[in-house]
Image (tube, rainbow, N blue to C red; front, side):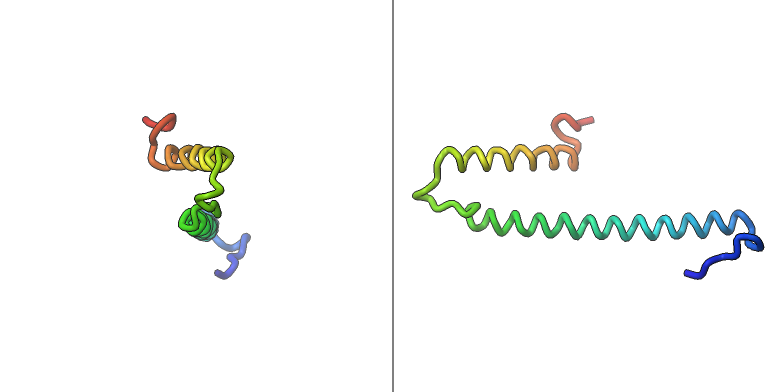
Amino acid sequence: MTRLNLITTPRHQLRAEKAARNKEAALNAFIGKKAEIDEMLARLSSLSDDHFDAHPDEVNWGHVGTLEHYASLLKRITDSAFSEGEHAE
């Protein structure tokens, strides 16, 4: 994108240019955060596929507590994302 001359460019054109740059920056930030979330979800899915690194013969209540904690954090996220629970309308 080329820079507009602040002296000779009409004000409405300057505002439109700034709005376009702002929209592009927001889209880039959105795509970056989505990629970050996708990576976290892939790692969690892989860990879940591996039974959260717990061997069946070694599972104890500590493991259950850890999974309960993970589940409560994920529930907060899904409730917010899907307008459920305390986020219900």
